[in-house]
Image (cartoon, rainbow, N blue to C red; front, side):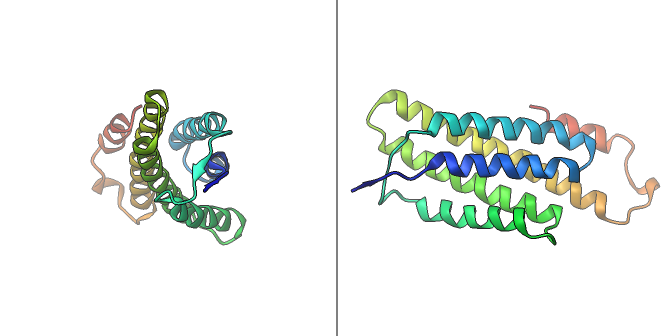
Length: 161
C-alpha cells in the first residue's frame, strides 16, 4: 500500500519555524536561520510529488515532530529554547526518514537525493545545537570578565557554513 505522505509539509513547517525564530534571536544567528529556512523551502519543492510507502520506518516520528512544530508556533508562551529543541527534533527525524528512504529507493538518482537530504538535515541539527548552546550561554548571568575575549568570535567561526 502506498500513501501520499506529504514530505513537503514538514519542510515547509520547518521553514515557518526558522522564519518565526529570526526576530527572537541575536542578529548573529539570523543569517543561519534564513539559510535554514531557504533550504527547507527548496527541499519542499524537491519533495512535492514524492509518494512514501505507508510502512516506512520514521513516518510516525515525522507526525510527532509536526505536532511539536505546530504547537511551538501557536503557543504564545513558547520560548526560544522550545523553538530550537523542536527544530532539532524535526531535523533529526527527517534525517532518519530520508536515510531510510534512500535505502528503499529504486533508482540511484533517488537514492542520492535522499542521502543528500539526510546529510543536509544532519548539518542543520549541528547548526541548531550550536545556536541553542550559545543562546543558553548568553541567557546565563555571566560577568563580562568571565567570558574569554575570543569566545564569541571562535564560536561563530565554528558554525560558518
